[in-house]
Image 1 (cartoon, one colour):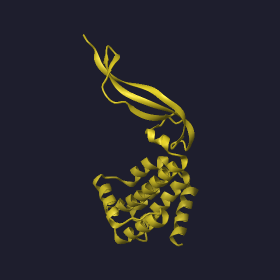
Image 2 (cartoon, one colour):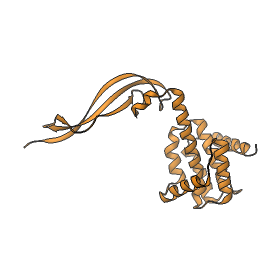
Image 3 (cartoon, helix red, strand yellow):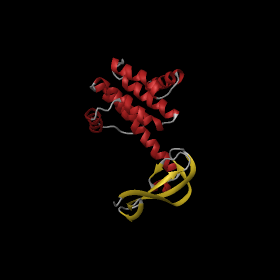
Image 4 (spheres, helix red, strand yellow):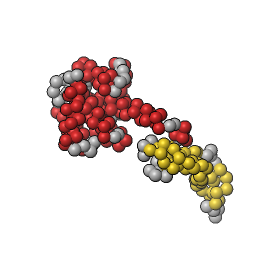
Length: 209
């Protein structure tokens, strides 16, 4: 009986140092290539696809696209900051949608949060599209924040929580669905009671500036 199968062969092409976005510092890396081969009796004999290149951080073991080697620390930090602003704003929008609707006062507050906290414009068309995507895909605040906040630092967690709190209280008081999810955010963001209260106080001070 002839045994035919496939396997991936991986080899290191280059080593050096790079700025790792996950570690947030310079680390050793290996530029590796992975290519599928057809095997005969478990021996690779014929390549059956193009080689895939990736950068492997030897410290955190994360894998990155090779373009990561072309970016310096400042570029990485700028990209990560832009990503955080989008994620924090989406988190605030999802908190508003906890009760299944969005009103005019909430739209105004979300636009103000986007501009004053995250230095970006949020027009009605974009907001409508984000709301539609969230509702169609049944994306909820707790699950979304649990996923994206893993890469946030402590300062970013506090800023995002403040934005969510302002969004939740856009109508002057917090409705039950928003109150429930905001209570859960302390554990989701792994904040102490003091850190949680401080983030809210900072948000309230910003609101009255």
